[in-house]
Image 1 (tube, one colour):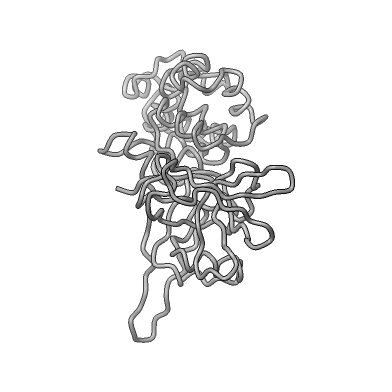
Image 2 (cartoon, rainbow, N blue to C red):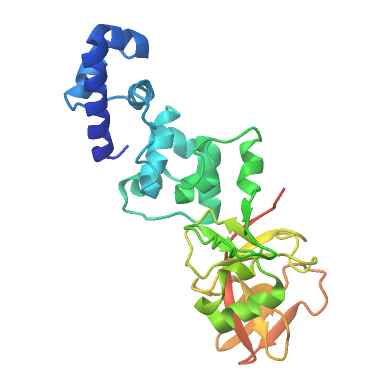
Amino acid sequence: MTQPDLEILRVAVREQIEKEGLRPFSERTGVPLGRVRGFLDGRDSPFSSIRQLAEAVGIDWYIGATGLFGERIRVAREEAGLSVAALSRRTGNITASAISQLESGQSKGAKPDKLVALSKALGVEVVWLATGEGPMKKGPRSVDQLNETAHFMKDARAEDGNTEPVDVRRPGRVPLLSWVQAGEWTSVESAFEAHQSDEWVLCPVPHSEKTFVLRVRGASMEPEYHDGDWIFIDPEGASENGSHVVVMLDNANEATFKKLVLEGDEKFLEALNPDWPDRVIRINGNASILGVVVFSGKPR
């Protein structure tokens, strides 16, 4: 919780204690008297006690946890009863120093692989951890499946009558496009009408408002990407040597997906599949990079 949220909770707890008494309230919530008094006096309190108090007065215990990425990490870590060092060991690839910098706000975000590692280690949904959207905790399926799943919502449409399509643009939601539409997206950019996409996907990583999603086709980018996978493309992402990019070639009627290779002044597109014919294509002013892959997932 943020400090303003804690103050709101203190007021609610005081009001409840006035109704039922301090000792009965402590016994009902399971929070020891000393911890209740300490919380009301503004002293640091264990997160488990804060959660119990919040639930006892009908307030969402993570009411302010969706504001900042680092705050969400801290909330989930404390709720799991983990130290920074323990969380680092669980992730296997994120140092304790890096986690501390994320929680303090010194680092503003994490790369997709680190984001997924954190969500698995914390036992929370990757979408909630990245954006604050949706439920914090995993559902009935395993967290591994949830981390691979991109959730989507349909665009409400009216076949006829006097109603209009619902604009489903929401923070964190991006349109699922065809490969032909991807080329059109770049040419018209922000003028692209939201209701032209039938499916909207919740992107679990930071992205620009121009981001869109494509379904991978074929085997040219195996073994990393398979047919049917979803790739999240950000036109404002930095295209660097080794970036996985979606490109529009001159005289083509749809986009293509390849690895970008830069050698001096030369640019090449490379298929990841070592057995792919014509694996490397040289581009020299005859192609436009539509965007960079910022996340990928396998819809279930």
